[in-house]
Image (cartoon, rainbow, N blue to C red):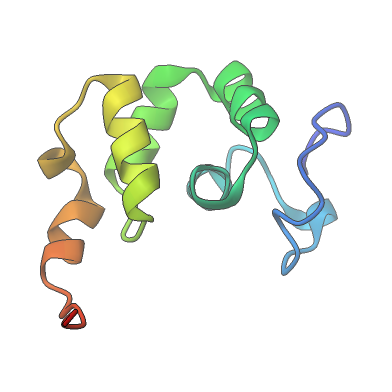
Length: 99
């Protein structure tokens, strides 16, 4: 269950029942959502709760992440983007051609 002291943005978990989310069990879901859609306050909440090492570990294993989120977490953790699992999966996607 998400701690009542943690007040995430209301739009962040629109598709989940907050009473069923556990900060430890659903860490990947929470970190992924905050990285892709969260505000600066949401980022500070997970940073204070999990710590940078745990966020880095979780982010390294995420299957998908927005490009901006990937650049941010790679910069903040001083980790090359190529080490993130989502980087490899992003490279295999066909992009639209821009004329």
